[in-house]
Image 1 (spheres, one colour):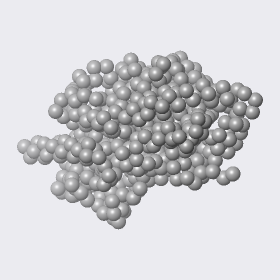
Image 2: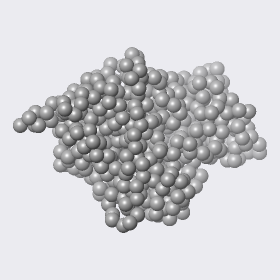
Image 3: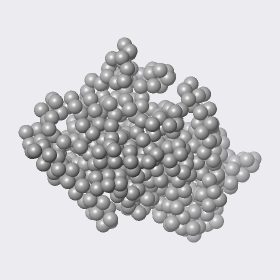
Image 4: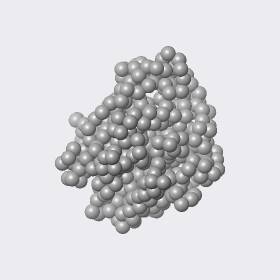
Length: 506
């Protein structure tokens, strides 16, 4: 049987879930969603016809914080630029910068329609900077063995190094464009949103403000519950259908029991159209877990093609598939019908390959970050959770990371570097001008800033919102609440820029 080409790229979706359950029994933070398959869809014709972006490279230094000889090595950092609507340096027109996530920058560029749609209004230059060690911005000539096979080399991958990359590139770009007085606004979603907020805090002399969408800057030790992520996934499915929730919740034990019976793994493989014989039931549960989690994250109100082609309100569609009487009483048939919405909405997949471990999109770096600084506790607890109880255990993470990389995580480094406890006071001292958007159907919102702190530190919370839905391209079917969110963001950014020009004139 043949598999759809997309299925050969699904490895990253459940990489960390398979690792956490088969190797360490502790939750590693799932990678933030990226457009791993293809752009969500065509951007507006006015943008598409003029060219979405052009590709440039900047010679970046390897280490911004030391002066050892190797620190001065360089690599080519990719950035994408669109100057179609820029008002020019002479008019001090703004520069909008996307702080790249943990993957190929083109994925995020093609899924951040909000910046393209607002550029004409602001007469803004658009710049999308790729994060070091991801996509085409890889030191050491991009050799994966050298990049990730040596902890001394991959040690140059960190959020602080990435922020310094963005700072040096922006300064140099403004200098080359003679745009010293052009205000810079940084944008980012998910991990990129965290970087946008942190950039504004650390480099206020470079960025006038930041739009940090779905940025879980509080998802760290001792700040929020390690169970909030999976509690929200539970709420998402339970809000659609009590029966749907109960079927998924009860399925884990059924799958384990079936897998232990003679011929059970073969039966499970056939039930879920798995291409090769299952090696264990854990592989199947990891695959299903990925479907439920990433669908909850991208429960958008319109059809999308961000992580995988999905219909509008995909959680509802999954529950309808499970509740459909046509599926009969067979739990596995119900689960397959629901998972098929995530993995095969196009209807072209004949079987699913759970063993492919390729990484064609250069996402492997996140595993290192999840073993060093991005210690974002996650677990599943309580009788009501949709997933089996699994308590967060930091020691399990230590054991895995020590065995894999020979390093021990630093769980408090992020909050030491950027702040966390008493985040209201921390953000006030940063100088303000940050928008935090969070949709409460997004599992990551549990680690987000959900209350406004001041007039310029604004939290926008959407009850029905999903993972950085505000940054997506607008759609004629967008609900009014989403239109209102985007208008509010535009108005706030406009006020920042207006005040900047007033101050400049003094």
